[in-house]
Amino acid sequence: MRKLSAIEHRLIEDEHARLDQLLQDLREACCNFGSVKDCQGCGREKIASCQGRLNSFAYDFLDFVIQHFRNEEKIMAGASRTQDSNEYFRLHQKEHARLLKEMESLMQELLAMSKQGHTAVAIREFHYRVAELFGEHTRTFDDPFISRPHSGKE
Ligand SMILES: [Fe+2]
Figure (tube, rainbow, N blue to C red):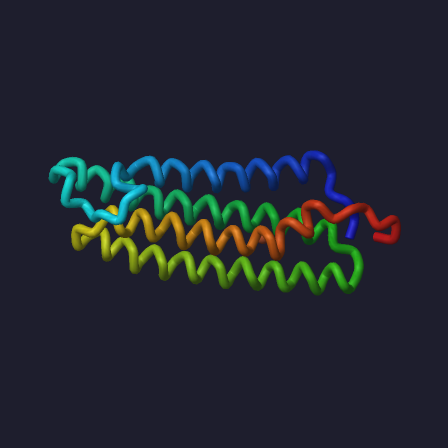
């Protein structure tokens, strides 16, 4: 595997930072985020606005993740030059597909929950589950790839 160029490296890091930012925006949408409460303390209008925010967040986030996986895979495919790194690339690609499926079903489950009036719980759940899924993926698949030192052999 060749070392990533500064531009490739920057692109991946910027996209990872954007994913964190999106999650932070979601966290800030809910005024009960730090508690275990549902939406009892909020009025009808605020609840409707949170539901709208969660809906658009879910679709924006998924779109961004799809685009990010595509970019990351393109860079990885270009950097993989040995059989070992090709194999690693395929595993990583497979993991992206699995993550997307998991995200889609999580989204459906939580948007239905929000529609029933449990928007605060849905926002919290979305935030923690996504942070967990992506945190693990980043540690296992992205970090070794991004910080892999140049081997000299490629
Ligand atoms: Fe990845």
